[in-house]
Every structure is written in C-alpha cells, then in structure tokens.
Amino acid sequence: MGIQLTNTMTRRKEPFVTLEPGKVKMYVCGPTVYNYIHIGNARPAIVFDTLRRYLKYRGYEVTFVQNITDVDDKLIRVANEEGTTVKEVADRYTDAFNEDLHSLNVLPPDIQPRVMQTIPEIIEFVEGLIEKGYAYESEGDVYFRTGRFQEYGKLSHQPLDDLQAGARVEINEKKEHPLDFVLWKAAKTGEVTWSSPWGEGRPGWHIECSAMALKFLGEEIDIHAGGTDLVFPHHENEIAQSECFTGKVFARYWLHNGMLNIDNEKMSKSLGNFLLARDLTAKFGGQLIRFFMLQGHYRNPINFSDELLEQAANGLERITTAYTNLSHRLETSRDEEPNGQAEEQSKIINDLRERFIAEMDDDLNTANAITVFFDIVKEANLYMRHQNVGTKEITAYMELLVELTGVFGLELKQEEELLDSEIDALIVERTEARKARNFARSDEIRDLLAAKGIVLEDTPQGVRWRRK
Image 1 (cartoon, helix red, strand yellow):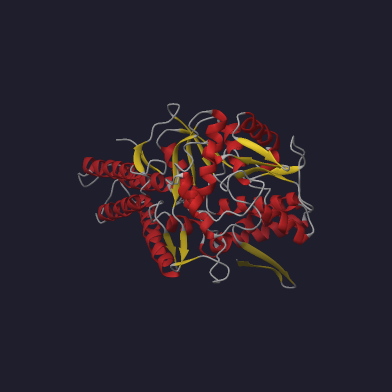
Image 2 (cartoon, rainbow, N blue to C red):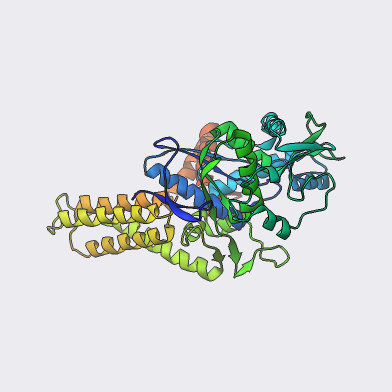
C-alpha cells in the first residue's frame, strides 16, 4: 500500500503522495531559544527525525527545515534580566539546543533559519497580506483579519464562531476582531526592533514560520509537523496567512505528536517534575531516551517514569546483547551454511524486513516496529543454538539489526573500549613524546584518551589515569 500518514487536517490516515515524485519538503517547528529544552521538547525532535530517516530509507530525497525562534517576549525578558542582548541569549541556547539534538542522535536540519535572519522576508510577507486586504495596520501593530479567511479553524476543526466563544482573548482596542492575530508588533522600550513601513517593531510569532517555509521550501510543502500544542493557534494561523498570501494549499500533510507527562502528571516547574533533556541524556544516554520515546505511537500521549525507562533499558539491552552475541559467533562461523538452512534463513530475514516496512508504512508505527526488532533477536538466537553457524547468515542478521535500528537512530556498533594495557602504553608514549618536546603528538594522545573517557592526573609518582 505504500506509506500512510494520519493527517491532522482530515483526521484520516492517507496515502503519502508528494508534490514532486521522490522528493519531500518537510518543515518542523523548532524551539524558542530562551532556555535549555525539556524532555517534552525532545519528543517531536526524535519522532520527526525518525520520520525523516524512514523517508530517506524508503528512497525519498528529503529537504528538512527546522526554524529557530530567536526573537520573542521570553528572550527579551531573559536578556533584560541578564543585562545582555537578545542575540547573545539566542546564540547561547541555539548552540545548547543543537548540542542536545546531537546527544539524542538527531540529524541536524538541512536548513535552520532564524527570525533575525529573515526580517526582510517577513516584512515583505506582511506587506503582501495588507495589499490583499487580509491584514491591517493599527497604531504601529499589524493584524491578520481572521474573518477574511473563510476556512479559518479547518485544522483544529472548529468554526470561527466557536473559537471566538471559547477563546481567552486579551481585550485590545487596536483589533477589529477578538481573534485577529498580530503579524508585526510596534516597538516598546527596551526591546530589540527593526525598521518597517509601520515604524520600528518586531515580528509576531506566527508569521515567522510562514515566511521561512516560503523562503526555503516554496509556496507548497509536503509535511508540516510539530506537537499537538501547536495545532491552535500557531499552525491554524500559519495556514490562514500562508494560503491568503499565496492562494495555494500550504501543506499537504499536518502531523502532530502527543504530549509527554511525567509520572502521569503534566510537567511543570511548580510540581518539581521539570526535566531537562540534557540532564537525562547525561544520566541515561541519548540512545535509551530515543528508544523510550519510540516505544509508543507518536500521535498518542506518552508517560515518562523511572519504571518505564527501566523497561525500555531492558528491551534495548536485549537488542544490543543479541548483536554482540552475533558478532562473537561470526568469529567461528563457517563459509558454507552447515545446517541446510541457507534458504530458510534468507526467507526469515527478508520477511522480517518486510514486516518492519509494513509497520512503519502504517503511520510510522514505531511501537509495532520495535516488536520486529525483538523477533529478529528471537530468530537470531534460535539460529545461534546450532553448534555451527554460517557466516552469511550471521552477517545477515547483524546487518538487518544495524539497518533497521539505524532508521530509529540507534547505533549498535559501539566503539570498543581501550584495554588497560593499551592506555598504559599510550601514556608511556605520551611521556616520551613530551621528553622529546614532540608536543603535537603528546596533545594528540591526550585528546584521544579524553575522547575515550580517560582522565589523566599528574602526580609526584607519575601520571595516573581513571575512567570517567
């Protein structure tokens, strides 16, 4: 049947058909960089990184754009509190965000645009909406006329009247309608601003993604994704302004991941259950956090607890242990399959691969795909019960595990630890290099050991070492 994805717009599972055959234009909303990301922010990063990896696995050429919101009320507040600039705060936490993604083995986006770098395109976008009658200026602010877009509410499946009745809208005499949303904000004292046709000011939140998607992906894109908390108003507003500006359907598929709770409660600082992604990856490793996140279907809420994380750790260990056992058996395997099972094992392996593809094709069902991993482990263990095994078969099981877990961003081929004797030899070589004033080699060995988690300590009795 091919890939099927649940489209938030239609609330149905639909065949995935791209605008251009073999190519995917994908936009995922990124963070507002005023602090370190929490574990809830890590879920969409991991989920949509896995979707991107799977699309590439299935042969698509993917252009992946993820924005950075580096101008916002929260950034301005932090900058004022610290006595620094908005750009300094944004640069610091953008770097931290990218470090956290790297720790989670999330591939870097092909393009990572920032608001500050897209101001001319944002102003041009707002001007176009005013010219078309979809926006208006009011005392230096510019607002979008939601009532002019007949389909407003189509993503959240709520008509305009219901949204107005249920919305908590701040009283604002500048607006023509309570649900009109800001495209451009007039300057306030102490804020970072830019010159515009409406005076000094800065962009509103929603307009940035529309302008960036248009600039880097064009008027129509294949996939727009993010957390369910973005459906309304952010993505609803993106649709309205983008489709009014271009006259075209903004995105073919809208995908949203469920929220993450901590011990069955919403995460909040007041409850003391606010967990930073970097703290968890430092404690448990990014590989386990990824595996945990992918155990549930991406559209469903997920609960994070020590008990559930331990269950995930046990499951991941089963997979990594099987791979290690296979690699050991490979050393004593035979060139020819000795049990008359060459054809049977080949079929088992091919069937497992097809099952994985079928599960992932079915709306990125990573939960069911993980059961395929365990079935690979089971079949591999059954085959390894034979006294003698074939090189081709053992290799095929190893390659299948690497291939399919790689789609999940997991890495089974762990870098081998240095043996104590190897460390001692390197320290001796470093000492000799320092005596010979070969500081380049000395530094090279020090960096190598540091990368392997080896800490050197100079003592009166000589250099000692320990593992981190």
